[in-house]
Each structure stands twice: as structure tokens, then as C-alpha cells.
Image (cartoon, rainbow, N blue to C red; front, side, top):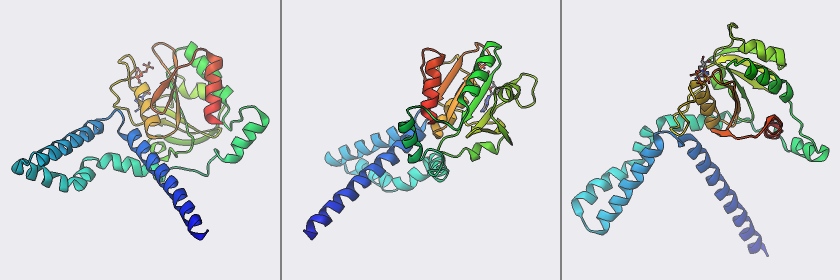
Length: 262
Ligand SMILES: Nc1ncnc2c1ncn2[C@@H]1O[C@H](COP(=O)(O)OP(=O)(O)OP(=O)(O)O)[C@@H](O)[C@H]1O
């Protein structure tokens, strides 16, 4: 009986172990996705495979050289992926699990059968539509569980409640605050003129410039949501997890946004 319990416990620990490795791999993938790091990783895998092959074919000299290279591989990895490891630790350290997205909220959502968000999504969407109409460029980043403190320092910190006029006046062309991104936490604009990390993803269509690349960049590195109004076309883009989210009409955008923030 006792043995059975220990066995059960081990199985449970194994499941947790696998889940944690999966989570780690997911974060690692998110970090290297679309960057040159993925090519370096492929290069390392190729060298490893050649080493195994030369070893199997008894090519002593080449196998020895590659073997030596692989044996210092861990240190080489730390040097080569220094940037990515830094970002990974930053991402891990800035995850705010106790934030708004608690289980209680999800329970509340199930019970009331409607999407509840702290953020005034309607005000944000109304401002976006106005700015879209007047072709006013805008970049809004909404924080979720990962803290955005590391980018907020690049801009001006503030604490203003989200309203349609406030958002419009921030991005108004002649406003001193219109450059860069505005960060929203809960229902407050907490920073403006923020400089975001720009994505190196080569799959982003060329018609998108730095504003869109910055939106992709921050959503690749954190779980934040980004909304962009193009100054050229007035088009509203919604970006999540480093990807442009497609939607058919304003209603659908509203539903997706509310679901992602609930
Ligand atoms: N790293 C960045 N972080 C935040 N904002 C940025 C960043 N880079 C550029 N921007 C903003 O984007 C504006 C210029 O965007 P650019 O014209 O290159 O982008 P775009 O994606 O083509 O957008 P649009 O369709 O509006 O022209 C800048 O004036 C600045 O406000």
C-alpha cells in the first residue's frame, strides 16, 4: 500500500517535471523565434550530428577535434546565447503571477457569463477608431502577467486613468507625448514615449515599419498585448505573442481583446 503511494507520488512529480521542461522549452522558443539565435542553434545541432557520424566512422582526427569542441559546448552556449539567457532570466523574474489573472477571476467569468476586464477596452477601442479615422499613428501596449517595468524606464512614467480623450491626446500629432509607445496597466496609462525592443523577425511584411516591429518585439518577449494604428493607412493591428491577430470586424476585435484580458 505504502509502495503504491510512493509510486503514485513519483508519477505526479514526473508529470510536473515534464510540464516544467515544456514550459522552459516554450520560453526558450519564444526568445529565439525569428532571431539569429535559431540559426546558431541549428548550427550546433549540425556540428553535433557530424561529430556522431565521424565517431561512428572512426575518423579519429576529425572526431577528436569536434569532440573537444562539443565538450566545451556548454560554456560556448552561455557565451553565444548571453543575450537570450539575460532576456530569459528577465522574463522569469518579471512574471507577476499574483496579478489580476487569478483563478478567482476566471471563476467569476464563468459565473457571470460575460467578459470582465479591469481595463476599459471600450475606451481604448473608441480612441483607436478615432485615431484610425484621422490616420494618427499610435502604439498601445497592455500589460498582462509579465511586468513591463524594464521598458517603462525608457519613457516617461505617469499614472492617468484610461479614457478615450486621454489616449487621443497622448497620440495627437503635436503632443510632446505622441512618440513611442504608451503602456497600460489595469485601467491606467503608466508610461508614455516608451521605446520598445524591435523584433528581428524576417517574416514581418516589409510594408510594416518600426512601430509595428516594436509591437511584435514586446509581445514576443512578454505576454503583453499590443495595438497599433498605422499613420500611413489608418489600419488597426492587434498583436499578441509576436503575431498579428486577424479579425474580420470591430466587434470581433472587441471580443478577442476582452477575452485576452479577462
Ligand atoms: N522601438 C520603438 N518603440 C516604440 N515606438 C517606436 C519604436 N520605433 C518606432 N516607434 C514609433 O513609430 C514611429 C515610426 O514608425 P514607422 O513609420 O517606422 O512605423 P510603421 O510601422 O511604418 O508605422 P506607420 O504605418 O504608422 O508608418 C515613430 O515615430 C515612433 O513613434
